[in-house]
Length: 146
Ligand SMILES: [Zn+2]
Image (cartoon, rainbow, N blue to C red; front, side, top):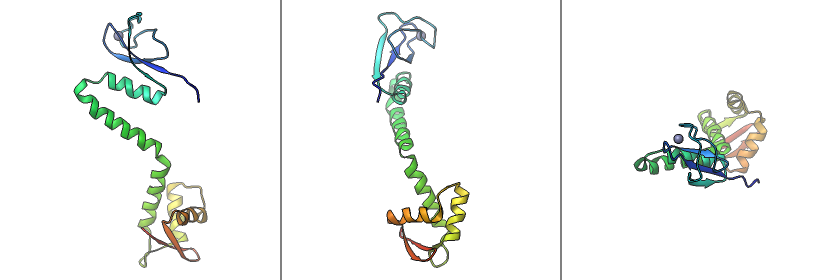
């Protein structure tokens, strides 16, 4: 990993914050060149964190806690993307069980095609079995365990 750091600088002229690699340059809000006295509000190591710190620094104090919470939730959600899409997939599978509570290979295939999933029915269901989500109850038939 690189050790790139980013600075959140507060412009002494307009008071707005922006992200920079170095404690110099220009304020993108008012065009003022940063002086030696420019305030370094925060030092961060990723552009994600930079975006968040800049947005926070430009948010009035009373609203910051709420904004920070919302953003941290957003970051967590995007980090867990594969997991949620697997959950969405099984949510859809749950909707296509037949009257006896079983999933058929045809029903699963229909869902995979609708979702644009490239894995085969067998691959997906083997993974689901491995995770304890389904139980194979015959050739091309599964029972949902949840
Ligand atoms: Zn400025």
